[in-house]
Image (cartoon, rainbow, N blue to C red; front, side, top):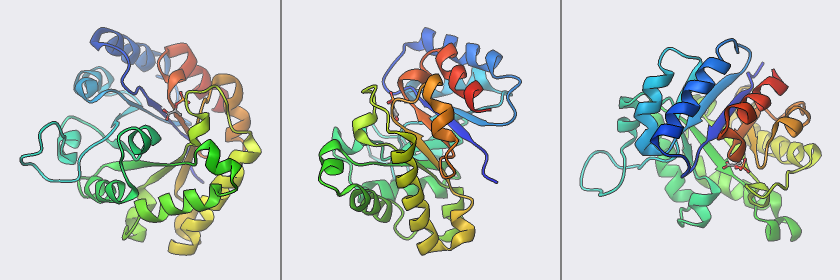
Length: 251
Ligand code: PEP
């Protein structure tokens, strides 16, 4: 049985005061949630102060990115071990904004997945097709390429620790949500890829989140699908009520 996992991706939003206030509000509001795993991924600079607020709570801490190299001359980057050092449990890798705005390839994502696992982080690895790719009938092909590239040479034991986030690019921050059927079709396809490569026992434990304009009013229907194990939430993770609305809808 896979536990639902709701993670908030705060992206490049909030300032220190509002990040702390959001963390305090969530800590209080989610105190009695035990049925669902929860995490928030603040901007890197705010990971540590937010982690201090969340200490002892049921909300896990994540980063939005990390670098694959070990400590050294890599100006502007953060080593994965630095993320664990300040309390991170998760790291989002291969978000579509990093793939399509910042030019990250699946090969880059793969190096980061290995580095994250080595540092003891749980990678939340995003895959997803653009609208023109869906329109051209290559949704599965795109997701398979990103899956294969991002998880290359990851062992079965490590794969069990990873989280996949299916995030159709056309649904991120657009208010256009995939229908539960559209999302489930890709989730089932991804789970099948895991099963073909690693066996059904691994596929049965890997959690696959959906991301793309998830809100309190669409979360329950999406997450009631058999292969949708949670949500990666952008916009609606920036307010206590909106994020708690999603969590409470699926508990
Ligand atoms: C995301 O950033 O991963 C995301 C899904 O954003 P939103 O919920 O705003 O569409």
